[in-house]
Image (cartoon, rainbow, N blue to C red; front, top):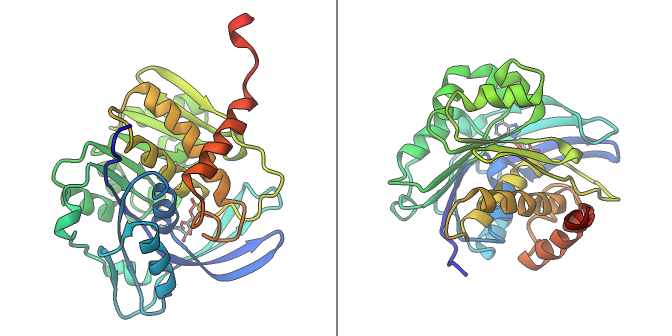
Length: 308
Ligand code: AMP
């Protein structure tokens, strides 16, 4: 087995106010970097870059350190932590952003700790695209760069999103974001359009319907894992990205096959995230838990294809 390479993760660290069908939850610790770092730490050493205000709980940083996540790149500055509020529909798939407050992120100019600059794997988690690029420029020669974004940035910062797309290997977005970014409704046409703008590969997440990978070998579909109890979908996308890059960081080469296996590991990792409110479950999930869920996922499409 290959020794896993280090992964640099930039993204938000946040307080979330969630309106869920089961009730409201306020001041829940979240953020794209928080979810993705916990997820990736099941597979490889992680180095997180973010900024938090003086209101952010020290226990979360302690829990991250406890999972082998380096947090020297998480700056604490006077002021308020990033805040996001969202409302979920009863189907727990569709959601509406009610509020986004950048707070300390509005003036964040990260300077990567020297030890982070040789990171071979980079996850540009969901945050301002200019900040994603700024961090990427400080990494010496990354082997693999995965990026995520969302409608807030696609609508608000289209030029910076376009510049970011030209610098990455793989983009991961959901179907709504893929449509917004490409201006095309049909998913295959949307994928073709996005791939013409820079990234070598594209992953489109489709909630409970799983995720599609578009690459040089064609299209691959990873199934969604049907859970009986979905409590809070927040962070599932970030956990997916963290699980994917985590798996790849342990592979000798990034081949189409490794990507396909990575898609299944990502699905398995994200399925834990939604089992509890906030980061509660993703912060404790283990590689063994993920391996066990992978065999349940494989069983979903075991249909004796070789004898058909
Ligand atoms: P996900 O459910 O995977 O899309 O990620 C949800 C997390 O993203 C929440 O914990 C939010 O704090 C964070 N988030 C929401 N909007 C933004 C944004 N515009 N930029 C960065 N992070 C965000």
